[in-house]
Length: 154
Image 1 (tube, rainbow, N blue to C red):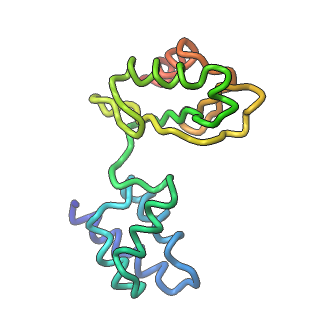
Image 2 (cartoon, rainbow, N blue to C red; image 1 turned 120 degrees about the vertical axis):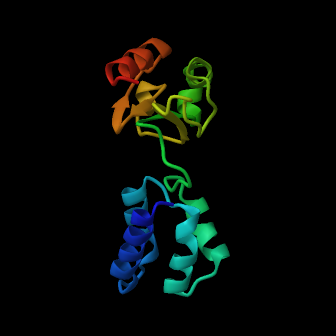
């Protein structure tokens, strides 16, 4: 971890440690600053909050938005819930993963795209659903996702 991250993480811990219920806001702030919650941040967080590494790991692993490595420049989320599966979501996911050459939660070799599974984007009537960099995509298919990735420069 670069020294600048270590200093930044220390500052975030100091800033949030005095709040009531500081852990989640602290983790979000660290991830915003570093692109992830790096392992090097775990010990200082545990020490500041007087929690065990197991407790910290439980929180980080429970919430799917926390990452231990930075994402690609673009994040593509594909719905894996039953409604989207029933209208082609499984085939869509497989096609996109094959085309990008990565697996669920993986990032392309170029670092351009991270593909994450999600379990409902609230577009059940317009499935299969996906989300690229926060923009929801209804009735997604491989061609639509390819076009959006190309437009994004991925």
